[in-house]
Length: 461
Image (cartoon, rainbow, N blue to C red; front, side, top):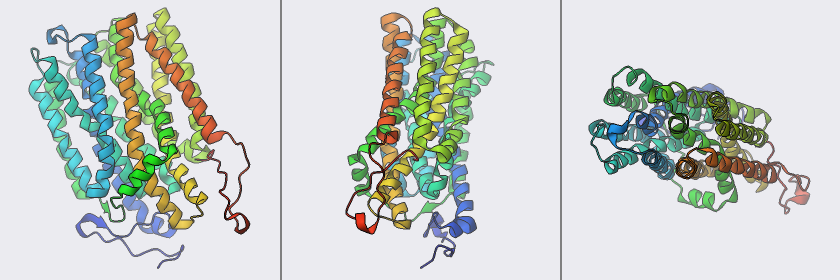
């Protein structure tokens, strides 16, 4: 047994498995845990980063697939929608794979699996290939979206509650940067005449490096057990689905716009592939870089508060986009779109920070304390993250399908932006009503009120 001021024995490293992990113990964290957690965070980001690049690979390739490929704008939006869909669906099994195989082991496997869509795309990327073949190979690229879920679940277990906003924001932000990086790589390689296959050839060895680095420097946590009960409990909890809705508004926007931005510029403003590529990387880059700041602000001021006002900002930016679209102002449209990317990234960090705080509050409401409360919070927040991440990514599917229908019906993306504005208004109302509105004062848990359920405020989550 160890007290709050006693550091437990150093973790066992047999087979890269850590037998004891107690990040909430301040002494353990300072003497042992922080160094290990940061090392795992770094190499988790590396693998997740490449996973995002492979997932969003087709958002770049479709820009450079000219008339000789025989694809219509509707075909391209359908292709990117289906890639996004697979990336969303595989997040659920990827979440629970960490508990089955171990965080390190699954990072090795999931990184290695990225070779399949990359090599397949290398093989078929040429004019004359049928749309159905491109669609099938694009679906394979969707597995890159799963790396986010397993990485977030793994890193969530390594860090104490007070550090989760920063750690999860940094982990996700570093992964999200894979989107603008592959767009910049495409601009540098394809724009210089290298062709799509050269771009794919660059990423094949990078995937191998990520898998090898995970094998050499990451760890598995023994106390992260496969718990189907946690998955069922998370699925039954209303907060899992409420947060899924809010995450559609932030991450769904980020990934959906990442896939669609270049195509909108091409189809609505007549930009060439290179002209579109020169701009499209900027929004995802800034949105990725600001995500850790969203987590930090949530740690400091409360995720619900930051998320609430972030939705206001997203609504304003979308309203400006509607006006710019109707006035055919490319400069204003581009500037507002980049701002919308930044706000989606900021909201990614704040909404994901809310998840562990919500379940920690639920633990306290049950009368749990100390490590018991922390373990309860980790159990349900880790299980819910996969579901929330999957549903949130489905927002990207909806965005691409909305753009497809808007262009088919109106010849522009204006109709889609009107729908997005309405959705951000819904997210604002839900955030305020569920996590910030107080209808009754908080009731402290004391001996005299032990049988009463405390009325929780989630403003600080």
